[in-house]
Length: 290
Image (cartoon, rainbow, N blue to C red; front, side, top):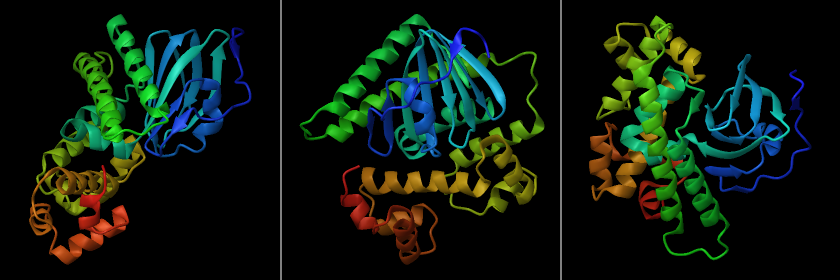
């Protein structure tokens, strides 16, 4: 351990959480809380000092004006910080990222899962912007009086932040690493996500996608597990659930029209699927505030 790093103090409570969004203002709260965040994406902006941790057995170090991205399922341990370390931490569920980025989710998935861009340096202007977003998100979360459209306002702020981060991630993806050639597995995983995102009807067997990619379903699933700790069927389901949510909440299509357009056998089957994944009927999902 480097001499200017120290072990984290006793963790305190999370500053805010609503299930989909969590804010932690002090990284020394993170190590304990991380054990409760198996399905959260971590976005950590280093404001000052340095941090070191192990991610899936690989040691990562990052410093001022750099952002750490960690996807759900990543194994994080060995948290160490310089004495002057300060950061801002935003934890987002897959559900909220999928919902807010929607048709642009491929940029996020490619950067985080395919290119595995765990650490990215932000330009000064982007750092200032991130801090402003973060302050506004925190302010809205801590408001004692819930106003009309509070949730929609909050999600709009987070959505804008995610789009700006995607712009940075995309620029890094375009540059790439000239000395590192992508493996055939990584290329296949990238193609699978692109193919899945492009389908109007996504709810299909893994074999459908495997055939189009000229591989076996077993191999496609193995590659997805390797690069994302999620099976191909889980990726398909994640995209389908968000298509269902969007159609019910953001369109005027009838429930039968939605069922048909998303490839369900009949409206009864669609209703069962929605109840299983949302815990309520399609009409109730439509009525509920987003």
